[in-house]
Structures are given as C-alpha cells and as structure tokens.
Length: 320
Length: 136
Ligand code: SF4
Image (cartoon, chains in turn blue, cyan):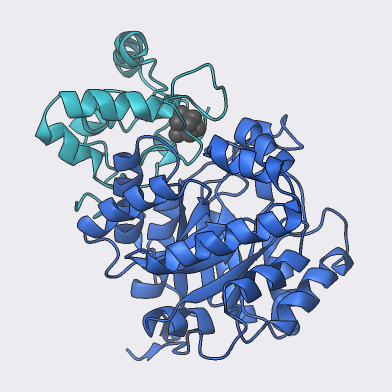
C-alpha cells in the first residue's frame, strides 16, 4: 500500500530543527464576528515577518467565546502568515477536535498546539458544560497517532475510501508547560510526558521569575528532555504594574516576584521599563541551556512586539 | 451519566453498588469504570474538575486547585502520597494514562478487570483504544 504523505513542514519546524532561535507571537481572536479588530496586530506582524516565524492562535482563551482558532488560522494563511492552531480540550470532544485537525490540515495549517484549557468557570459562560473528554496529553497522543500511523483515536484509518491510499499528514505538535506552578519536579515530569506523547515544542507560561525558570530548565536539561524538545519561553511586556498585580491575583499559575512589580511601580517611564524587562528576559533566555526561542504575548499592546524584538536585537541582520 | 446500557442483572447491580459504597467512601470515587488509583498515589483523578488523568494542570499553585483555591489540587496530593509509597508508585505516576472509554462510566471497575474489558491498571482493552500508553 502506498502512503500519501504531505511532506512539507512549516517555517517554525525548519527553524527549530535547524537549531535556530524561533520567535512566535500570540493572537487572541476577537469577541465579535469580524477579523477587523486583529488587523493592527496583523500589520505589525507582517512588517516583522522576517523575524516572526509563526503566529499562535488561542482557542476561546480563558474560557471566553471568541472567533474560532480554525477560522483565524485560515485568515492568517490568506494573509501569508504561518499559524499555529491551538486546541483546548475544555470545549470539544475527541471527535470534534480530530475533525478540526483534519480541516486545518486541509487548509494548509502545519502547526498544532494542545492544551487542556482554563476551567470553564473562569470565563464568560460559567454555566456551560465542560467537556474534558481527553486531557492535553491524551490529545497529543491522538494527534501523534494520526501523523505516525494514519489512524484516528478509534483506530479508523485516514482513507477517503477503503481503496484509497492511507494518509499520514505531516505536522508539528506543541504543548504548554508552566514552570511556575507547583511543584517544579512534577512540572518537569509532565513536560516529559508531553514529549513522549508527541510534543516537539513547548511554550511556557509568561516568565517574570527568572530564577524559577532557570531551575526548571536545569531539571529539564538534566532529565534529557531538551534534546528533542524545543522550549519557547513565554514573554509578556506590560505597560504598568497594574496588569502584573492583576495577573498575580487572578490568573491561575502565575508567579510574579514582588521585585518586578516594585520595579514597574518606581519606573519613570513604565512603558519603556516594561519593554526593558521583556528584553532582559529574552537575553537571559538566550543564555539558558535548552531554550530554543521565545513566544510573545502582548494582549492589547501590539506596538510592544516591535519594540521588544528591536530591543532584543532581532530586527538586525543575522539573528537566527 | 454515560452508562449506555442501563439493563444490568441483579447480581451485577449488587456488586456495582458494593464497589460504589467502598470506593466512594475511600476515594470519593466517580465510578469511571476504569480505575487507575493504583497508579495515581491512591487519589482518584476524577475528583479533579478537569478530570485530568495525567498530572496537574498549569493552574495548580501552592497545592491548591485553580478552580477553587480553597480546595487542594488532587494531583498534588496524588504525587505526595505516591512518592511516600515508594519508587514503584513513583514510576507509575510517570505513566501516560490513556483516554477514558466513556462507555464504561458508572460500571464496576472490578468487574471490568475480571471480564478483561480493562487490564489491571484500568486501561481499556476493547477495540477502538489508543492502547500502548504505559511505556514510561
Ligand atoms: S489545579 Fe489540580 S485539581 Fe484543579 S483543575 Fe488543575 S489539576 Fe485539576
């Protein structure tokens, strides 16, 4: 039986496999039926497309209703950008999630990112039924089975008809890790499980506590996890101390040292200070063994993307 | 909730009720029908609001659950107890637990092992399973 295989990977995959330092940016889709609210951010990303390898599209982030990740990924493809499709197990069962994977592949999406998803009561529809048919690790396993064996979670083969060739689509699989949740050893072992389940890259939670990040990476490197797994450090530039305090108190699993909050409070120009902290974090990550890139989360402050990448020296020639 | 075949004979019902009585008392068990507490530090992972079967989510901080910060994260307790119970148990905590077979919800996990519907580790053996997931 011949095997139909979609061989070409994306830019993120080649960057990571060639040992380069990858840069990805996060898009949180709008809450209204229009792509227009994303346009400013898209224009900035397009302007920096030399530097930015892929754009990660969140899936009903923080359990709020938004444009679907799949629709926004298709829009990004049309705009000439490389998307990463996030899938949260909170909202769909394995039938729907595999269907979305196949649809996205048909559109030409080549990067997938599996999360379990923030709990439903943290979002705008706390009365809805949480799904959690599978967890993120089981979803990685299911997607990995599709690309390695051409079979779905049920064992059903990817064939258009019984006489057609078996299809084994080629794509990159990623997952999240939170070095700042407790206990740190369990975080490392869970990252190892994600790798065994099929993850090739990891995005971490936003890094403000560099000491904890170093400790996490030291354990991960010692466990041999980073030879095949590419870790992208999460970077979130902030305009003032307020969002930091908000996240510390409201976002599950965030660790923000008091020193960082004080530094933002005392700053003459808080915006410049926020960019400076992000740039320093990127510099520290570049020195950290096992780190393969950064993932920028700018929420609504899109001009920060350019400032941070410029500050970190990416916009000059010969970064990679 | 997901027990698709409601028709069970009297003996099966009695046995299932007995298992429910014991395991709800011991583990606050949800009767998922594919028990893995022997690999999870004797803590039932179905107590987790997200029913995570492979360790704590990224929202677990200071041993507390992201959904209700007054409650303990079941997985923090699972890892603590698991590691106290020795290296055999610690190793099992590193297993990847396969996706749940929801057809077994509400049935007796003990009968399912006896009937080879799951293996002794609570991993479904029927057709249509991912299988081969215990490799550490
Ligand atoms: S914090 Fe622990 S108990 Fe709460 S949802 Fe996450 S894994 Fe489950």
